[in-house]
Length: 239
Image (tube, rainbow, N blue to C red; front, side, top):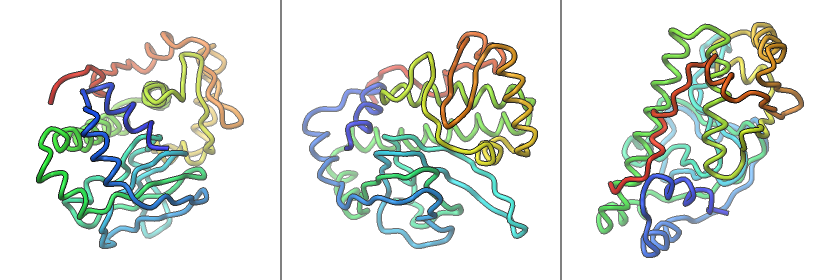
């Protein structure tokens, strides 16, 4: 169930058998949850971090009028809130976008790892800094990319991140979310997203329908997005 996490780690670093065993030993309860469930609330005191093993999750913030901005989509293999280990509570909420399976990592067990395994600690620290890199790229999309570019960019990003854990190919991937959720990621209205998706489809680049992303021209989609995966730090290095 946790193999996706180690696939993600080993793309970027060398993880020894001892380190894998130690990290597996940190993990405890396995929990299934339905789609649309907020399982971490803003300001809630946390004693564990959450590793996603199946499904899609989102971090989000909402306003008093009910508007919601999704700030990150998590894919299998991601810790959704590893930074809560040091923060102890979050300034945002975390919810399931689809039916999900998670594994909890109690903070007292993570503390033992940080005190006894320096390399594994750096690898986990890298995971949180990688999240920050993705956040910055989303910020650029929201602030400077037009609607077509930001939609294409997100679809390219998910193709790479899901591909790392064996859930995407150059031809596409499952993305079982609604256009409304996609709009909340992109800072657009669902009507605008519908128009952009139609434009991308008619250009022969990509089609998003029925929870499936079918990529017809990946290089063309990347050109529209001006997509450079460097911010995902895909090279393997010793940290």
